[in-house]
Amino acid sequence: MNGLEWASFLVTRRIEIERMLVVRMGDSFPRASAPEAEALRRFRSFAGARLRRAEAGAPALDGLRVDTFATARLVDAWCSVAEEVAGERGYELRALLAPLRERFRSALLGTESAHEARRAPRIARRAIAGAIDRIADAFLAVDLDDGSIADANPAAAGLLRVPREELLGKPALRHVAPAAQARWSAELEALAESAAPRRFPSCLVDARGDAIGAEVQATRVATRDRVLAVLVARVS
Image (tube, rainbow, N blue to C red; front, top):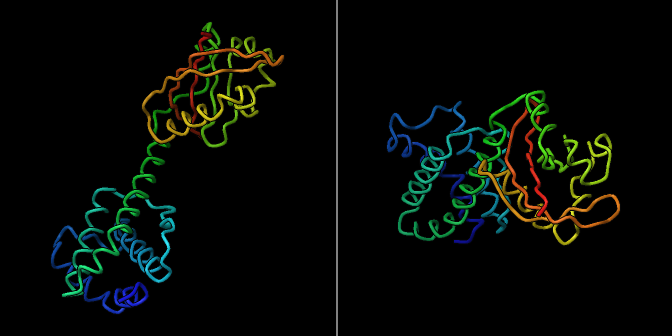
């Protein structure tokens, strides 16, 4: 059977598969209104679409907040039952579903990471300001969504030779040397995915175009309305 035939099989045997799944999982099978049940429905749609089109696009997980591991177990159980219903040709279906199952699991983990970023420890702007204005090292708070500078201390303004007010809202990469921009972006992307602090060498550029080597320490912080990378740059 080809992908299109297997997609049709999953649709026509859906009720049988689900009944067997309910029996197998018992009380652990989620209610129809549970987010995990919605995730399973989206996996079925994703799998069916990919089998019909022989493509491997991203699953649609917008708006889902689920227990990632419970959902992964549910999807695994559904795949196992579907393979049983396929009988002697279950091994064919298993080979087709395996990469789709892994892609769905990876997408779930990515969604969970994004939610974790939004749930990062929240602190008030005023609590940050008093401390950062007094430190000698350059401080920048960079919005992890768009890369703009949300805050800066006098030391950063002095180092970059730009008035603080003119730094705010502008792309942080504007003040990073071209050769260092790829590393800078990669480090901030990693910070968006994980709360683990980062440390990396970089090269800033001031308003005169002079290069400034610096060691950067980066920490993720969530305010009321956005997630920031708090960067402290010490000139090396």
